[in-house]
Length: 195
Image (cartoon, rainbow, N blue to C red; front, side, top):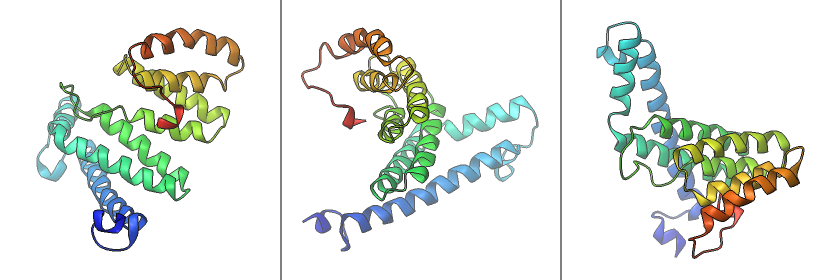
């Protein structure tokens, strides 16, 4: 049934690999476009130098939130495949790129992408169970909470991240009130595994 739902034969992993390869091509195109912009002439469209050219280029690249959102989706999907295949370093690289791309999207309501990708990056970092990665996860989740202040999942993830710090009891106590406030209206019990 899974093979049928995902298209041609080969199972879920093969389908996910095809999807990841496609997303990798899209990511490469996005990176090449960004490189062209930083040089001041993406395909000859911009010829001016200096801050005005840089601003014009970033506006041109981000003007289409739909394309940017598709890029975020593709990077996250490819990263999820890599995590499933235990290639965590490559997945982290793609997730960092997805977070950066999402941050470059123009503000819009509803949001151009349906959830903060930093939550996924933080979840992978926390799954490694190391203090350095937990510190990076905490920084990412603070950024998510700045942009999405009511994200109960990011707040719960931040609580898990600070537990890796030098004084986990104090840090957890400090974040506990935030978790209670963020989840007070939830009808579902959240789990850190959702990150």
